[in-house]
Image 1: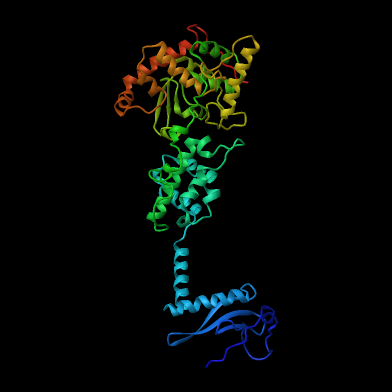
Image 2: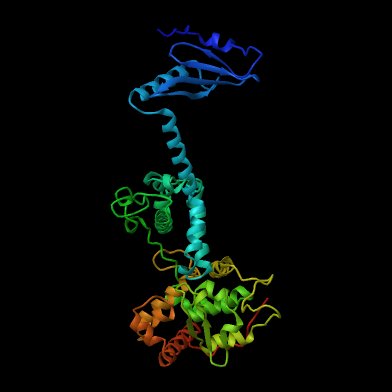
Length: 438
């Protein structure tokens, strides 16, 4: 009958010492047959379980002392013996688990790394570099701080939900509640990255960012949450009075805003306008696709007032911008907004009503000028609504767009823009040659 080792206490185990000669020394600690504490000549201590597995004698490591206590070592030894009795070799099991872990790590990819690889793989799918940067920036701002260090294989529905439900203001509103459109885009982009990761072999299973039958059950539909917040627009009847006040102001911001009003173009398109895009002889502004929201070239017929404004502007050597800022770069959107604000405040100071949106009663902003133009076309003219949509570079039916891209339709749009300019100028013979630049 094998000798039964004395069951040592934790204190007795702690007091065990290497004999000082020879190699590693082992001490039976009892409690579980074959459980040993191995002590190296330099004082290192590890737990071993000496046991027979089938016809082989094994020494199974159970961890180091004191991180693994005596009680923990005895529990691990009992678990190992239970596996052996069930026909499992703990050593071989550990090798298989280690090999699987190595395989996962080789295959493993963090979400931040997956974003980079996805963008590199899908470079041609983006409309332009700006769109690609916007795509990355939204993920960097809202998703990567949470999901970035996680392996894509480990990301669950709850992780994606946590990103979409993060608080974004002091009132406790979540991203999905306060910035619903942005949150919806982020969800779609996370889904795209994880879908790529699945196909590339970095994860398996369902996509946790999928909407249908998944997040749809946990979040309200974006259309039910999104706040309809139209940009405050000039009232149609206020537009001529506002335009007169604008023309009386000095500064590059005022001239840029004047040009934006005459062309009904977006702020970013006007602020980034280049002289090479403009043909003063033909009265035409050709905006390349990479600068357009819809990523399509847009032709803007310039009314005489806009041409006169441009001819009176100074040109700065080495600067291709039509409306450069004081330091040479693009004017900021805030410059145009500040100009609108000052016009509103000056009108109120002169005992006027100011320039406010008809519905919200908020002061009008630059982007609202496009809504004013659209309302003027619909309520005060007989020009076709589709013609106004094309002038605004909105998406319209392909057949309509094709017809309006023809030269004859460009001339009809020119007529519409000339009528709009005449309305803004209050149908007077006001000279457009007097242009002030501070």
